Image 1 (tube, rainbow, N blue to C red):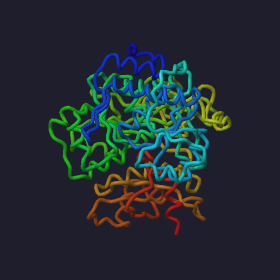
Image 2 (spheres, rainbow, N blue to C red):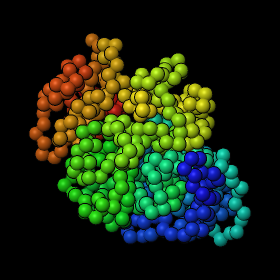
Image 3 (spheres, helix red, strand yellow):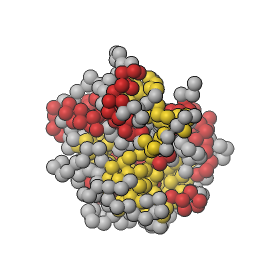
Image 4 (tube, rainbow, N blue to C red):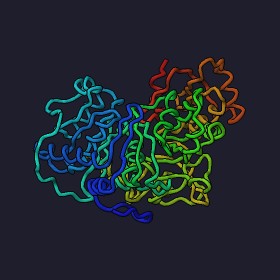
Length: 496
């Protein structure tokens, strides 16, 4: 298997595991326990799991549920399911009992790998008829023949506006997700990523895990993000890059912990995705820690990344998630024609990393595609250099008195205050204007900030019309599994 920087990877995940095992070397390290997993060992364990499932009568492309936090057991289960030709169904441990019940039932899974720490949650949510897989069987049964177009991954969207949708990726699109990361960030076998995001989210699975498989590098994996341990773990594992989300960057910025100089010298870059990174947050982080942050954009439906800023010394445009790498991106007008440069419309993408379909949902699949273009639901503009600027989510737009207001504008104004750790603006029904602007924030410990202070700061930057009429101070803002703030839930949660 040869990595081609111009064309997506050929073959299946099985082929690439075989290739890495033949090359040898370290696949994963786990700094919390000092465990290490070599590619050869990982392949052997994956084969044993694949044979066990095959002997149990699991059909090719049949769903097999994985209910695990980050760790060696969950990773070997995932690779075993993929190696065997089954559809790895990643269960979001943060989704809640009803959503987990729906995903397990909708996926059609008959078998599940369940970590002991998730056993109570699983048993409270699982429908009847699922069999827990524990241990592997001694068998030499032949595995299913595999092709790049076969189902590989099933991952459910957060379902903030309805039932979760099951995104189906093939071996080809899953590998392409690791490839877009590899080519955008010039990953090599000498690189070691740092995975602090859950592998049941597309960023952790495709950017970090598939990125290491395709590039031939290794990966440091921890069970969860810890602001107090992040830099220590990064130094202990000798990582050269990390992928996080804006809320993690903000938490690191407001932590008293500082990295060792050797850690900073080793780090080539940090990577931000899942939601827009506030300009002030990025600049302040880079000034304090000396680590360049590469803002990117991705979706579950595109095996993560569709856009990325170039690495230094390439031109990074702060406030933009960058250019297309490995796929094509355009801006669509309401009539589905392509917009002229610097004109707002819906961001759309096509390429080898785009999903196959939504499982058992042809209507939603058809509504998401316009020809070969997948509609992202994000609004944005493309400048003359091809850099995309995200202006908001179509469903999150605040329409006040007939004027569209992008919540990100208000978020940026709020994040400009050094005491703000998390911020999100949202719409509230209003008899006068149809909708009005409100916001919620989390502030640093010991802050004396008042609502009136923040409203005045917003008015100075944005004018009175776009500024929040009310700002709520919360201990925590609602988030999805990746750490992305779910602003659509705020208005409901803050009723009254």
